[in-house]
Length: 245
Image 1 (cartoon, rainbow, N blue to C red):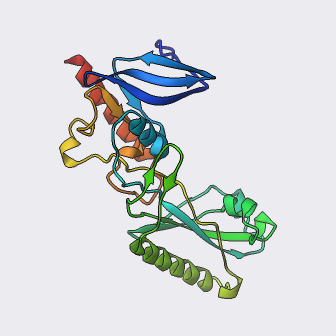
Image 2 (cartoon, rainbow, N blue to C red):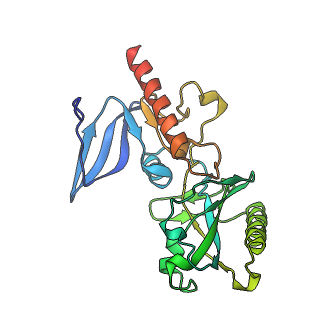
């Protein structure tokens, strides 16, 4: 903004406006009004759920390849664990299809009635799964199911958590599950090897770019923020090089 950018808040982009095969701007809802914002280059970074919707509203099809990085915690009572006061995910064990990490499951603690009171007396191990890209998202609906391979990987991860807690002296009958949820959507317009140089899927107009996990070819099964940041910087470089031609 110090260099002249203008930030517009309370604005919901609905579609990219295309003319003669180029993006000429975006149509957005600002308050109760529909407004057109012209642009020489359009970059969508509305996330793995938001970007596909904008693309599809613009007549640009996406792939049925949504992944969401499912998360499930296996927990147990543990006096003065105080895990709720620790840095989340201080380390992780990478097991290929999933990672395991210490993580206090606030979602389950506040919204899962099966979780006991007393946040400081709960010890929790998180499973984060690299799920199969096989879901879809539209303007009003997300459809995503675990495949048999996903279910088997999740079962294996749970067994590993149960073994870890058991080695710590926790009885299996005292363990309890968190609420299965998801944290990192993406993958509905994945980059291919042919797109590596331009960082732009071929079905997009030449001046329309994406800069979020929608471009990921597959789930990372782990926090994607550094990868997204690196990708966004490479996309910005590609745009700069295009404008310099």
